[in-house]
Length: 219
Ligand code: C5P
Image 1 (cartoon, rainbow, N blue to C red):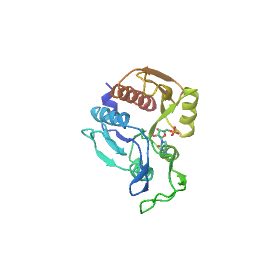
Image 2: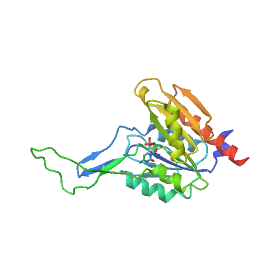
Image 3: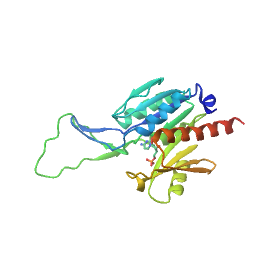
Image 4: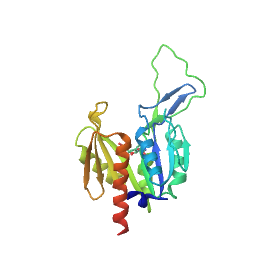
């Protein structure tokens, strides 16, 4: 009966990639599809939560029944929107593949090619999840970590560093294969490993762990 626990809970989810513009026609980005975040949003809606989905560009259909859908492009825009809604949030799930860097300068006109090489200086983007970890009050925080080695150890470090309640670690070395192993690790260091499931099934498993934490905190 996990639907009862999530009913009317305010859940904020970031999803997709970010797009960091270089000039009017060029940008830096990554391959994240946004499927995991959209699956989480749909599952949370179906369990009765009030879901705000903040999404970078994706090819996905917007889930039905959201409280609000906010479309953003850059990490800075995503950060601004997360800041706006974080205070009035019960659960924040950071699923977006946020670009770690952005071009220091946006060129208003198309960069012309020349015969020499081109250097584009990059500056750090804010770590949205870590910043919310600092601001955290009543909110439960869930993050993701793609790791290739010492998976649990590295994920636990990230969980502590960003002040999270739950981290979902996936084995980056199995990416692109049909072996999809994730481990959901909680602050108390208990964890469960899940093999070979669709993203919508994984979404329910992740929300189930969120509910267990909420129930434990209540008692
Ligand atoms: O440190 P790392 O990038 O591996 O952490 C991944 C987690 O942090 C994900 O939950 C991701 O959504 C979040 N993140 C973020 N803002 C960034 C970088 C990562 O919210 N700039």
